[in-house]
Image (cartoon, rainbow, N blue to C red; front, side):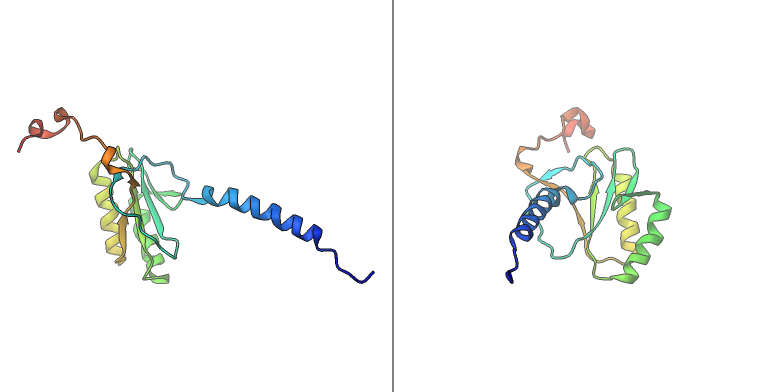
Amino acid sequence: MSDINVTPLVDVMLVLLIVFMVAAPLMTVGVPIDLPKTDAKPLTSQVEPLSVSIKPDGTIFLMEQQMTLEELAPKLKALYAIDAEKEVRVRGDLAATYGPIAQVLGAINAAGFKKIGLETLPGGADATPPPASAVPDGGQN
């Protein structure tokens, strides 16, 4: 018998295909963040961007690695030296204050990155504005 039986190969390939189809959506950045919702159009990028996440308590994550702001700056400079055209997406939690997010944006800018974006979720039309009591001066100008 000189024929090659490809049936086992096809079976294995189909199983691998199913495994990768199920696992691919789970390969996003693993830091759980409650992102704000906006009406902005989604960006399409061929290259996986760097992700910097800020949790409500101010903890900072570069991809999935937790670090302080002082540790973040040299890492970003080293990454910029490797790929100056890399995009950086900042994922600030909805409950995070503006201060840590602004400091992270400053560190990214100081490292030299030009492509910086704020990551949000689609669906800003349903987002409710904060109550008037949460806005200084009762929400009036």
